Length: 334
Ligand SMILES: [Zn+2]
Image (cartoon, rainbow, N blue to C red; front, top):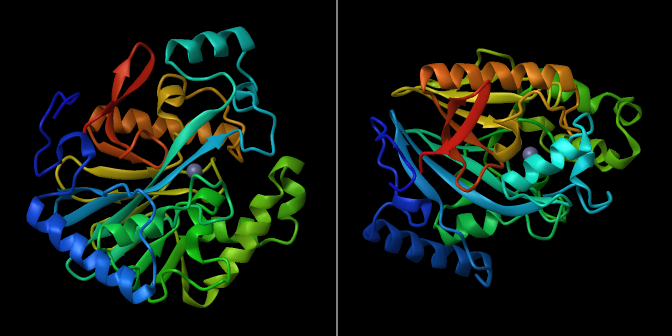
């Protein structure tokens, strides 16, 4: 396990996160993938990324790549300063240079979590679909390539309703990609995006966000249940309130071992916000609350040695928060 200082109890991680569990399983997956592709008439032309799979407690967890995207989004001038507007420019540039990031745009992976329980297949977020950025929206192809039948997904939980987490819920014709699933989102999140005046609450650059959220949440409203902090999606998968990135952003706490938290976008960029959780991130809806949630999560994870899984951390996005000076450092454990 290169880069990892510790073997996690109860974990059977794969080396470097590049290949699934074993050859027999991989071949079985490939055969199933071809069968699904044939049935759905899909050509597997896309160079698929194999899911990263590990066990945690009674769960088998796979991280499936949805591709990647860039920030600031293409409709906004290329300038990372836009993303961290309160940080003095020389400090930001020096920091980004130190961690090897561009000062124009940052590229973020889009990691989607799949939790297999004895009775359920739970997808956490649905990726970006075709309408966000062309390099994202690869979830369906990667599920197919891994032999995972999307019709077998029983539950879809949204950490929040931003494009890269929600817009993959349906295809361009509006057909649900996970037709047999029930859907879950925090009540606060539903209320925020479905309110008539939400458009007025967001800057002009972000007007696509509420339009897309209303469109896609409406598509699942008959199959949707709202969640509150402490609710269990299934036994052992519990809702953790982590608001601020959006008003109703949630994480999922997964029972087993020293714990695992599927953290969504509480810490959007591993290279920046572990080291500087206090830097305001322009895409956080309620910046002060987002900073509080970020600090609380990182403090807890560092103290308890809880593993974290981040939507946009280096694929597959699994790691721990290690204390460093007055902040933290992301240490990948995959
Ligand atoms: Zn995101």
